[in-house]
Amino acid sequence: MTALTDLTIAGMKAGLAKRDFSAAELTAAHLTAMAGARGLNAFIVETPEIATAQAAAADAALARGEAKPLAGIPIGIKDLFCTEGVQTTAGSKILEGFIPQYESTVSGKLLGDGAVMLGKLNMDEFAMGSSNETSAYGKVISPWKAQNSNRELVPGGSSGGSAAAVAARIAAGATGTDTGGSIRQPAAFVGISGIKPTYGRCSRWGVVAFASSLDQAGPMARTVEDCALLLTSMCGYDAKDSTSLNVPVPDFAAGLTGDLRGKRVGVPKEYRLDGMDATIAKLWDQGLEWLKAAGATIVDVSLPHTKYALPAYYIIAPAEASSNLARYDGVRYGLRVTPPGGNLADMYSATRAAGFGAEVKRRIMIGTYVLSAGYYDAYYTQAQRVRALIARDFEQAWAHCDLLLTPTAPSAAFAFGDKADPLAMYLNDVFTVPSSLAGLPAMSVPAGLSADGLPLGLQIIGKPLDEAGVLDAGLAIERAAAFTARP
Amino acid sequence: MSVDDATVRKIARLARIGIAEAQVPALAGELSAILGWIAQLGEVDTTGIAPMTAVIPNHLAWRADAVTDGDVQGKVLANAPDATSGFFAVPKVIE
Image 1 (cartoon, one colour):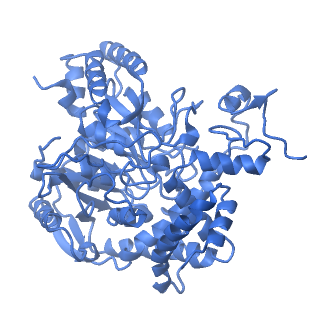
Image 2 (image 1 turned 135 degrees about the horizontal axis):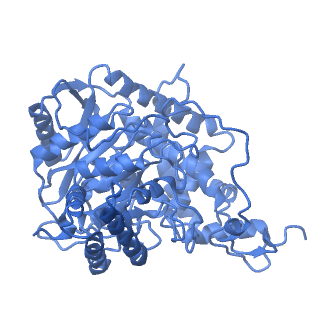
């Protein structure tokens, strides 16, 4: 029999329904795996008591025949989601010890559907990072190693704890959040799937804010179907989020076919960068062949403003962050540092100096600068104009195609310290940021291995609200790639 | 775009982030590099393009003008670094 921790969420649901095993056994197996993999540092807080109680409740519901869709499924929650009564830090020292008095809408929906919470997953501080090196609670280590190398690798970021836990079979699935690629890039780095839905599909209420016009929650899991199962639970209108979309949520898993007949898949030429890694370029071509075999037609398209997406992002996201993070002032919650004899202003600056890490400070300062008098129009307004052009590029592409296929990241996972220069780190998000700026649904699916045996992902981008189309293309790639490598 | 030491001190003050004098030159270098890279946006012709205000077009929902929350003083103060007599307490502001 397959180990319980190796099952997919769909497999767990089937086994629980048939009573092949109990939710208590399933949760116990994952708690054992979690305890055995502490070296990865994937969790900031483990919640075994909560998980055990939730599993017992799931077993009772299963016995009564009243089980909800995710009854007994053990998942991890990224530490950006407020969880009632359980510490939520966003990976920052400034929120150490913060115990939310309420539950975020998305985590509440998952738990309401019967999911079991194993704990809170480590992440880059305030989701600012692509490697998990900025967490105040220590870096997350990828369960993967390159062939013939013993160097520890990054799990990607910012949802690195989520990625590592799911890849290492500690959690069946996890919540992630994606501002510029924070679900898709870590999913690609550890060989799992992850989808960022259309901006507004998942409520942001109770999710610690980084850049509000970009932040979007989404699931990470080992199969496309499992992502669809979690996504259906996570999506939905929420009056408490003013940008929440009041549109029906389909049953994404039930609608999955992997059939792409009649679909046109665009290949944006601007994504074929000079000096692109040959293995990644080849995998991209292979992916197009796979989609063709599933019935799609391949068309060349152009997204002319692609090269300006990253610089626009690094104005807009820090600008919004500098405003959102102004709330951490040591008054109402979080860390407070009071210099002897200091006044209120001294308390603010000492608290923020001690509570924020280097990358967060850097981004707040960039955001403060681009919003300051005399620079606002040249930087911020211009970036929002370029953002409109980037969104228009996609709209024009949709006249010729239904989906886009690109690599998820320009490289496989790198080692700690390899991208010490902030700019080099930012450039790792080159393929994921444009669709974030346009609010489009996009997912990463594992498709192959690099020359030294590390996972590589392909990214599918869809039209607004066409998560179903994105998931179908993801399933077609998953079936064709038959990616079975594991850490 | 080059950021000098005085500008770094000014931004840090606006952002209410205390920085040690020894950190200023390094921060000036990092911020200059990032802002220099961002400056390429200036080459994009955006004449007649309105800045994006909504990612996905959406109407702001109205709700009834009714009290929906409140009477949770204990919860509001639960995470306060210093709560006194049902209020947030801060260091003295007026000397």
